Length: 319
Image 1 (cartoon, rainbow, N blue to C red):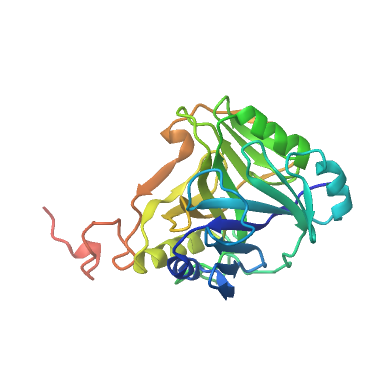
Image 2 (cartoon, rainbow, N blue to C red):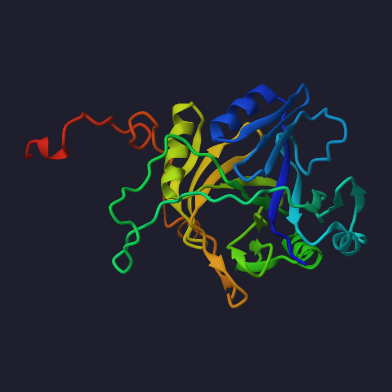
């Protein structure tokens, strides 16, 4: 029995037209639209639902809107095994083709047969000193990003141990790395990407959404996506940059549907042999390097930096 990743998330926000514009700019496809809901899909069919707070049947929030209301995880094991496994959890119910319960924070969590479709995408190859796989080909450049899927969510929790134990015991997640007493990186199966869920217990107790992360093909798509969001007028919080713990390259943008969203790529791939590491919270643990405020999509320079002149740098006179 194993979870395959995130199949669907539901966010709640009052300004649906603004959220629609944002997620279309982000690179998702709008597949359904109504007065109280917008439904988007990524390239592999992973769904992002943005619902108005007044929509009937919307799961309760664990913080004020806008925020995350529900995470549905994918499986290919069949629902009966998951119904048996989750039936003693708080809020358990069968709802159509999914089983639902609540985690210790009260967040609605579900499992369903995966609707994501397998896709084969061309991705950039990196020439290193030791390996030169890209021959007679330039690396790609992207005018915008088209995310493959929702790769992970990051949540604030008031009780790290209880919440982490729920995901390990009820859903079979595995700890990849830790900030002892402060944060757990969890992957949904022994073999897979570095984390599908990151739980954070901040010094000032709170619970809610930190960010939703979207997987893209390669570092060039992270950059192209971030530049496009800048040109469309959306605010970069941080990025581009690189996380040393997961090795992923990132770009964070402020979302009207709650907290932040992230483009990321090149995270570590782990197996049963991986031994979880302990880290001390700090700026160098979070980011090996990062650009605060992002890169301006028009000048292609750091925000508020002087625009390029159009001349070669070697044209500048000596000083």
